[in-house]
Image (cartoon, rainbow, N blue to C red; front, side):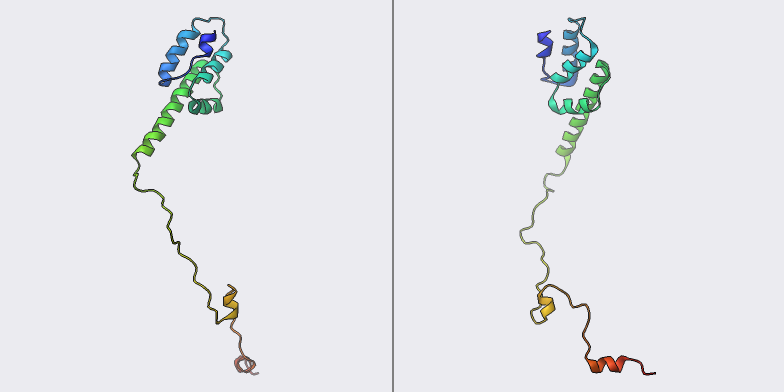
Length: 131
């Protein structure tokens, strides 16, 4: 029993499964829930996390999930390996900045745009319609 609890994945999941099955068959009274926990405790942590998240209901289900998780991780690694290594994010040393406010206009100097043009009283009277 202690040998199976110390078993750790060193190669592929399928190799670990065959080693695990050999050891489990030597302990016939082991309940399946305990077998699942022992299996999960020995697989790689990145695979283990995904399998535990999906809560396997049996040992064979845990085997299937571990194989699928390993495939998914390998696919992700191969995807990152095939992407263009020269196309990486680079921070530009001088980002485009906003234009500096014009100091001749006091409202623009404060960073506030003048929304309305001020009309003199004479111009306002000329624009008003006469009835």
